[in-house]
Length: 231
Image 1: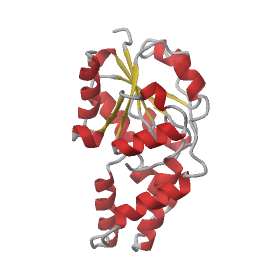
Image 2 (image 1 turned 30 degrees about the vertical axis):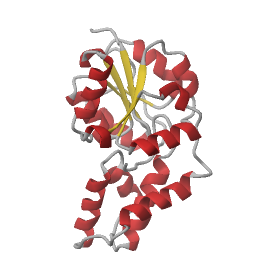
Image 3 (image 1 turned 135 degrees about the vertical axis):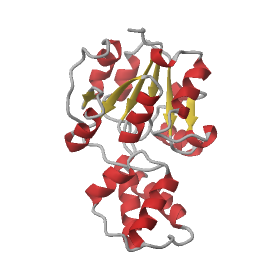
Image 4 (image 1 turned 120 degrees about the horizontal axis):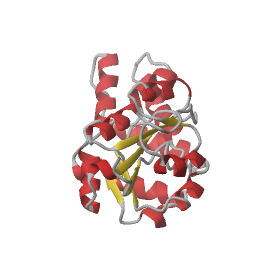
């Protein structure tokens, strides 16, 4: 197996605990627009997806276009929900300290949100200049374009990259890019990721060992309890 040369990390739900807020904000605003959707369903439908795709899904449920300002309202509500609770994922800062590899962020969030959340959680210094946004590349997961762009930026072959994702679309993007992909999740959502054929884990303290473990030999666990979100 190709030795790992680059660690590629998703943002929300992998580095920062913001997924609950994003899925809840979308769920609340979708409900106000008339969508019949449970929070659990929202977590599955919205996690990791492009905001435009989430809007299309909501419009399909209500049978009409959402009102002007829907996306702005979702983002504003998300920021309200995250303002007091934004923090690094438990154990991630220590895990990153113990991984001796170049690393970067590859997120479907806009660049400004990536920076804002990394600054708010004290992680920006590690990723300044190494944070890649789907909006800048023009490619959203599950398309592999964002991951392939990050690999090219570092001059690393896709097979030498390890991707850490907590969403189904992210896992599929990592696999489509030909990268070794790990799923960070728990409960039923971990089962969805495992069904894609990737190892799953529920504690970031396991990450250094998993990154250094050859593909196919690491344990599969169940997870961290994060919820969905759209960027």
